[in-house]
Length: 292
Length: 276
Image (cartoon, rainbow over all chains, first blue to last red; front, side):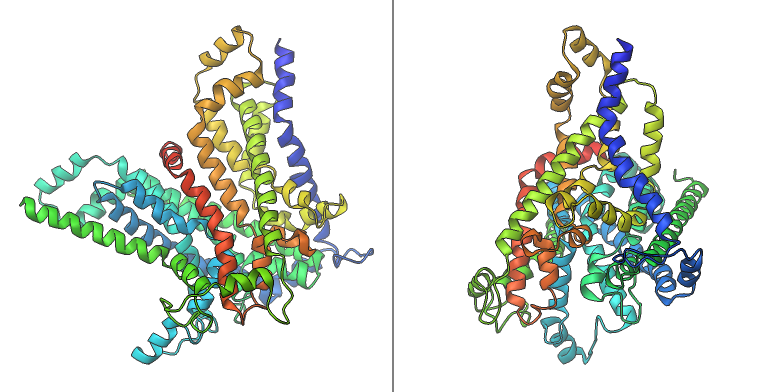
């Protein structure tokens, strides 16, 4: 009986074993191998170059920009999406009825393909668009949105924040639900101002849900590709050159498969360490304030 | 007192509705521009003249422009996303059931390995996975797009936690009645997991439907392109024809919104559970 059950267990788990072997272990080893070659993705021959790809990568503007661009995205995108999702969650939470209906509505942007949202934004920001006409004629502002480094990064961050706001708001509302109304009533009697109420009561109780949102949104910044690929191609002058963009360009446009593999390995090490450190810092921050 | 409270409530709903309209404005803009007269596309926030020209052009092709396989791409998207999502669901349920309810030697090792792989940055796998697909002859095929996305570790993780919460007594009782593992899954476990299944299905399908990078690498010939990839390819070349691009965007966005709205109620119930 128990050997039979054991066999059934392995049988049921076998899809994962096959998958992990073919699409994780083999690629992992292959990637390490490629990173020390000069293979160009097509040619039948290649030679070993040792650590040369890594040396070149550390010095290249592409890799250096990808490193910094990720953190710049984080600095712009994370506060933006956290603020917008808190606002949405607070507003929905204040409604006695149709809460679910509104949450579904706010979730809809999450369904958009990055290609579609990029297309819409490109249209909204084109030279003769209603937005730019308005800015030019009423405020005298002539902004080349995707042409200057900061605004290009900002635009991409807004598109992605738009997509995730409703999803994160949904996570935050479940956090709100755990806060009882009694505590607010008690605070009201004590004469607490709304500002104090938010920071002293809502925020600490919301922290576990907020922690989830922070971790998820930080993870997003390490995987940005579609919007950048569609709108800026990583430019202007590497201002939006994310890791995925750099690896894609090097491997599949420049056909530097060996070099791009080295970049991919650097990218994953940087990603892993960054997320680990940020997570630890967030946990410490929460503990010090007694939120979790 | 009651009057001001009511007034405050009315104001809250007003803010919520306005904010919601702002959030879904990009969709409204997309739909309006797909029907707008070509002179007004991207020129007005709310176009005043409407036509079906963009859709006709999209499906028939314009003068000097070869018609692109939009309809074909639309079906490719369904085939690829459907098969991929279905496989991700089936494999996740099987593996999660084994991890949660079938004690066997080596189970903890597999569990730990899955967690390790989940937190492993996947970017490192992009190039060699492409090479694996190329070597086994699946480049430019449906299977090439489907198989590397035939399993979702996130789904395995979610189902494992859910299945663990199902009391063993249900399963033991069914076993005493002579039910097989498959029967137990089909008759007991799955009916109990309806709402979480909806959540997982929707997230997987949404993600698969809007995938760009992988499908772009694997699909090369015109009749293999998914709608998302075709739209992405035409992004630049059709830059002078924004109307049809909006029509294609509607074609891409509408199905996923319909599917989501069909399951919205169950989705919400499931999310309540998932987030706890």
